Image (cartoon, rainbow over the protein chains, first blue to last red):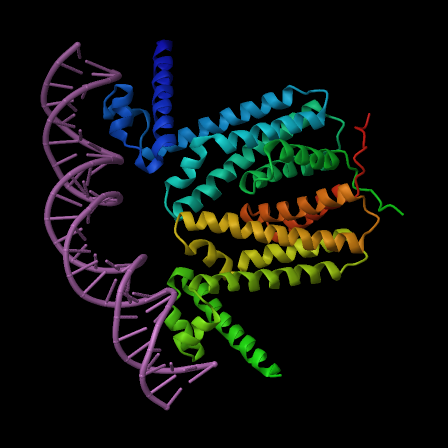
Length: 200
Length: 200
DNA sequence: GTGTTGACACTTCTCAAGGAAGTGTCCAAT
DNA sequence: ATTGGACACTTCCTTGAGAAGTGTCAACAC
């Protein structure tokens, strides 16, 4: 079986996405030209179309790859502090905030499609990212901190994702400070029992 | 002193804003015409300009009035459950979510200015709304639940505002369910001490 | 078989020009 | 005070012609 066929295909795919990344980060998604993309990698337009059936598919793949990279970074941030929940959350959130703040692709993606396209992106795409990030974080906490109450865990994970997203949109003083606050909040939720009483 | 002068002025102001509300909710802010607005209320264009120096000022006042109405509703939701923090938060959040979900003005405001205008609105305006809502909620909790730890209070209020905004953007299954979850999370944060330990 | 080239229909962007309509201001009239 | 008209200026809308881009096809080259 021609195994190398697939590796060649995925290599081509990667190089196409690399070129697309650069172009999109530089001039925005709607300025991206399929012809330029093909010639930048050194293939014909048809080869490109055999890899990605449409320009939209390129954007989709680009988004997915970037999202996965982001999740890998988060995962690493979490794994770097397996003994300290607060530090783990703080690292993961801080990584996400600094990445979202600098990543040119994200901004270019958002400013790419005019008006209604932006809304659809902000809803459809970020909804998928939301679900993925939530699922990943939940799996991590379940595995790394199994003694945490499931209800508290679910609420904490949801809060972590939503608060992080909120700090991306409404940036606080600094990513580090935001990460600290989010981590503090998340830990308090995670370690809560739901049976607390108001102090005297 | 001509007290009634001012009342007439504010009455005119209210009627102008009412007419502007209808027009903006119907066709969007950029389709709003100053001439239509004036004639809809039955005054000349100049009278309108003496009340609002520019069209932008109309939008500003409209936004402010709507925000204040929203905050009043939130305040009432909180005050309706002075003995139950969870119920108070749930009522306030639920009110906000249903209001934001149905309010045609908010959507019209967001879809009004094309492209970059949307971003400026989403940042500048919602930042002001954020601060106001946060300040109000903090003042309420400080007064109604004085025994709550200040650090926990601040984190809880911040989480309440941010999570509510998050649920406006990324709507959950239903406003009621979202409100329940937000209230649960907020209460857990509010009643936390920051010294919790992970269960054995 | 896979990839390239050129051609194709169709849609979308890009200007340019002109006219229409809207904003904000001023002033005489009431 | 409020009005109506007139004003300069800007923005919007339409029209049309041309360029450029997308997605598909078939003939061709390796």
